[in-house]
Length: 279
Image (cartoon, rainbow, N blue to C red; front, side, top):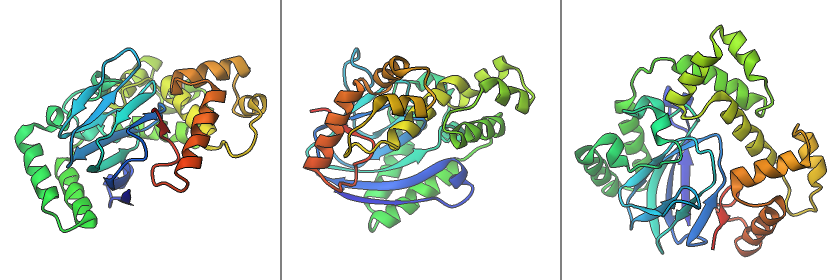
């Protein structure tokens, strides 16, 4: 697969980790993405893909792309035989200035780009992307569209600062301390988070702590789960196991097996690092 990414220019860099272009044959027809403290926008330029946001929900097809706010559980991405898209890896608060609805309405309910920006605008954007000269020009087109749509968002400064502290501490921070430092009530802080991120500060901190722990794992070596749980500040290994299943849908042991499969079958692949084979 071909993968090209870059950080956008200010002020978008305060909302977005990177813009990316992805094209080619996926390593697996279906990938599981553990819940993470991040959000995603995909503008699809190829055949439709499918998303299932929970084992109890039927997969839905997305032709023009999708918007995914910070998830609370693992979700499954089904690729066509060949895929082509551009997208945005948002910081947790990043989609808020581009959404016409509260982020909480999209929590664990991915929507099409058309539902967010409207059919005419999305059709025009896809046409411009399809006729661009290559990946870098496509990312410029996407960046220009985001700059054009950027708007002021009430409460964004509070949510951005508080979320940044959560990220900087790997989720190991008392939410009460953040509330006191911000000079707002717990209710106000939670409401702002749900409006702009889709989840409460506590839930975001849980996702951040888990993601930090997961990304630090070296699955090529034997894993002492007791040490991992203790080092990450979990109450005990049972608590860690519960969190693991909640965020990945897998036990820790099964997760290592699946990660090792990806590393073994597709070493150095551009998608390796977070997605897991679901086939």
